[in-house]
Image (tube, rainbow, N blue to C red):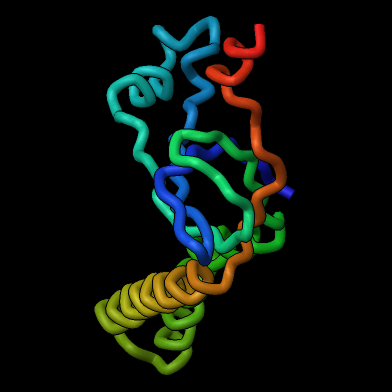
Length: 150
């Protein structure tokens, strides 16, 4: 299971709205000033992800929770985004070549296969967004509560 820390934004009877901010690991590297990846990571701001998780827990906005996602869902999403367009591009280009089309036809078939792969991957992403089960694993202790206890 892939785990991430999320912050509760708002609550309802059906569940909670959470937000996560990806953490760039390049900021902790010793050579990030000389590395092209480190420079790009500093330049681009981290994008927040906002999503709904159904649950029966009584949470308050601002609380942090540990969420989990099955590796299978993540692996399928990666395969759909990276492999499917590439496979369709190559398959249709080879098919066009086998049909005896000229070079322009092969390129056109290849690009249309890659484009179709991206469309299918996008539709699968929309489907998976509705059917992926993100679970709240744990509610993390709040710093405010810990300071009140001391």
